[in-house]
Length: 301
Ligand SMILES: C[S@@+](CC[C@H](N)C(=O)[O-])C[C@H]1O[C@@H](n2cnc3c(N)ncnc32)[C@H](O)[C@@H]1O
Image (cartoon, rainbow, N blue to C red; front, side):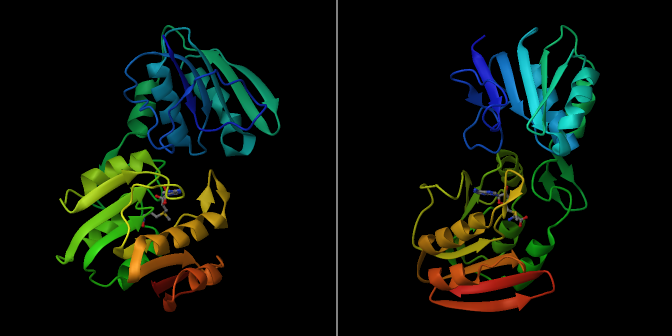
């Protein structure tokens, strides 16, 4: 009984986090796999995700992994699922004590001797193959049940690449799958923060030229340099809030990974002001395509 599990990063001052708690959010590279933690959890602190299916799945996984009577705290902003956590835990058989603080609901409970309804939550949130998309995927992953419009536009524009490249923020591997259609691509590195997406992408792409990296592109050091091309539909949200600096970091990282003359293809929502960062990072930036919603850049280092 030694694992104290922490899921996500609760804001300071809302709950106590046991010393030495082990991260188990799929959004933290290298974190403990709640599906297979190895031993029973002695306690759980969960900053619960906003999506209902994803949250119920994470709560059900955690409850299954906890030892009987182990204490748990699950919290979230009231308007991002927090006001529903209490009822969700009760439906799983927990007796819940609810508290409110700084626009959050904080629910304390113990794992009951008998759980109810977790199988349904585990089924609803489980990884699956979507016939319509021909993709392995999972609720909670970016654009898990439809192709993103920005990615679709970028797919229309991508040329047949040659040599070694990377897909930064590769998600389920939608862009990578297309890139690998070119036989002249020698190696492709998929870099992605969400471990669930990486797991699905490994099933979606079984090409031997592929290397998967469960990593944070902001501080990854394991990607090789001198690449011939980089492709990205960069994220612009960090833990739910818009964060434009994330996209700018992806732009700088793309340039840093390329050889001189290497090319970056990147799609961005129109409202995001990436032009200056692109101009600063690359020697030649072209607007390859624009629509009322997106811009596609082709930029040479
Ligand atoms: C706009 S989505 C694009 C996904 C995929 N390329 C596609 O076209 O469907 C951005 C992706 O970046 C991932 N991501 C977010 N922050 C990241 C980070 N710091 N490092 C690596 N990937 C990140 C997200 O999980 C998401 O899968």
